[in-house]
Image (tube, rainbow, N blue to C red; front, side, top):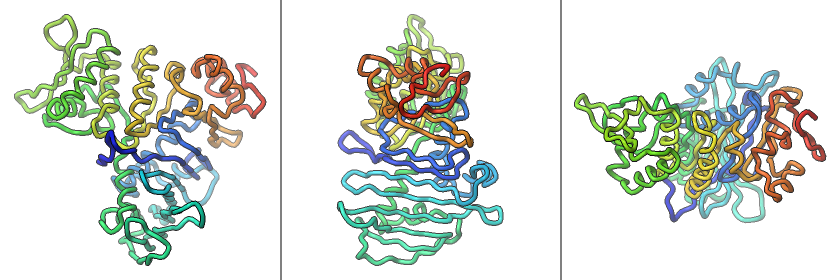
Length: 414
């Protein structure tokens, strides 16, 4: 896992995402992404699909394209209905002290097997001139420029890959002579796309400290053990926040049993004996897992969380949103939600609404671009209330889901 962030450096940031032919995302752009970006929309609007774009890209690097492709039903299930051509994902991200880098990946299928139809990296050094592609591949064949700051005057070297389903960035990023490629590889393999489950956190894993929370949270006890040994003050900070969120919680213990399993226990006041995690509430375990993730001493450079409101009391959600915003000092977050309580703590520029157009394809707009929202917020209105009153134009399954054009309020029942 990448540990590229600390208090003195700015973490890499994704500033732009474009997706084509990925399920309902026929042609969608997210420009000027904020450190905290929240996706809002009715069921089936495409929020989880955007979330899965990041999971798919991360799995392509971690597990290989073929496994990530097969897991999602191959082209038959992944490619947008009634469309042809490759599935493409393009991100622009910024590393500290370097120009914005664009990464493009297009995936297609031949004979039932996935191939990397096109993959390239480019940047523009300076304010003028055309962008320079310092890596470009098609179906396993291509070339790359090495060096810390590849330039158009440098020599492009042909480096064929073993097969057409290999990602060039993943392969070349393992070599010292390609530091910018390696930086992107480390960035993507460091992403944490969460599928946290309270049920998974109840397990009794084998003892042994682990630095990073798993995607399901089934090693929560191991991470508590690690932080108790290596970052005791950080763990106490987590417990302090947890005590403010969940009344009467004193501390959380990770105790090794004689059979080698790790037992997670939660100590409530005023009782003298802790409660086993498997008997704790879903909300307590989910809040603990979120805090462990957000207070990670070496956080992932990118965190995705789906519907954090599940199992949590509504009054905890604005405070969780603030915890997420604080964490953006060291990481970038993408969150999907259906909760007006979570939205109430957010700013219009942090929220994107998603909806399906008449053809069934996902469209998106930033809330700050919806007419009237800015004025409401200036006068003290909260986004969750505006959403429930219909001013954001989406989200009520009993009302027309179409996004109002500029000049329309899009209120309830209109």
